[in-house]
Image 1: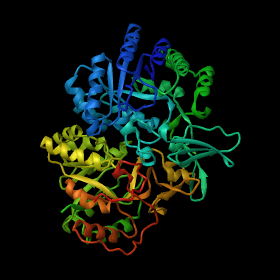
Image 2: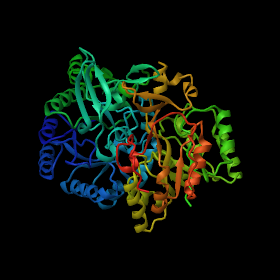
Image 3: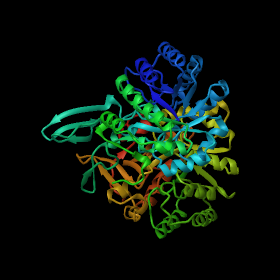
Image 4: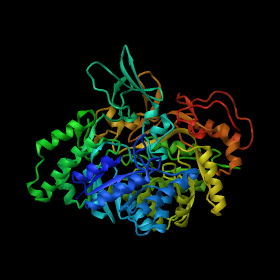
Length: 331
Length: 300
């Protein structure tokens, strides 16, 4: 299985390559990708430098153009596909059908990967993208249980990549509008979920409050560790009970599942986190490289080294890791 | 005149409640009715054949009927239901997921895309039109400006595709393989005791300052405020919108349909208060604002 690592900057990309990434993925410095953060991502010059660095060391580079252009953005998004193809990336990660169509016709020799934002949760959906846009690979949503991944993998007409580690989206990706309901930006439209511009922190007598466009997302008592106010991970009231009504602030970690994922024929595991620092990327890439090398030496002997778990736990949001949505039971 | 449609019932109602609802709807001035389970695979009060029988009855009453499909397709059982819905040639299918696109295309069943389909530009619509697309819904997070550009763009390309706008009701905003209703009751999803039946309008989720944010409805999350574009109807008509969609609620639906019918005919709607489940109004998406916002001034 291939290790695919995120790169939000040139140093992060180099670090990922140096620490064993088989492939790295990046986006341009605008709304054309699903990690639009200020100060993050690549201009063409930096991208070219990163691609050269990676290629010289045998790593591949994918470019994510995985948001949905509206008519007034069409030229810009199309231009991003042109730029990626011109830079000689090894694949373009796309979600929008219009852009997939453009890329397939204009750059048939540049492989197309279906982004997780393309909302393909069944092999029929994968067949749709394969038949019409000839995608080579698809990234599966984090909502699927392992059983469901198994079902999809058995009949998949394309290579599959699954999320291995990082933030956990529990909604079907590519059709979650919760963020644009509270703010005016969503992953689909602007490449942003619970955007930083709408976040406000405030110390109050009741505790530290996090708000998104003035909506109270969470309030932390003394000794509670505060997390970024991703709106689905807040504490809300339902029928008189206050709790994490949608999702706990936890991260995804599929280290334990590696032998099974390999047996299912999964082609690649993906690390989430283009918004993370190079130091974070180094630790995560190195740990997963070790795990994958260990797995390659013999899946029957594979055990999770406690040191890997320690490293990953220390890096996780809320200090927790779980099997995430791959694990069916909850609460 | 623009058409009025009744979207699929997004809540979980008993079989009798569903039959009673459509018994009345057959008499309402709606042109199109979407039928079927669009949310959760575990909701099986009506079997696919029950839906088909209902579809035939409503067709006999002069309604155009479209069969809706689930917005999230995950399991082999989900696919079996989808195959069944597309294994007929009497009715059009509303594809709410790419799986449905594939099955409809390979079965040569005419289809439209529902509001959860990722349709954001003209190029996407052109691709789907080549495959048999008969009409499309504006994604709920898009508003007037994008809609106008999409309709104009289609015109420029010479592609004729009727457009539909989700205009009234709680907005379907997200779907998960997890169930938030089951979570609330501390039940596993696979043994949820069908608690959604007790919540025919979903469960209110509020901030800790009592602000209505969302409605939990099984695996789906809807807006806490009710979208209402009634006063935008004249504007939509000018823009060339074909169909205005109203999303079913248990209470007061007949009155809502009547008012929308009055407005699309250019009449002044009745003004006595509606007997609806209480919820604040919103229209932000239409104006390119946060969806939960209520913009006061009308442009129409």
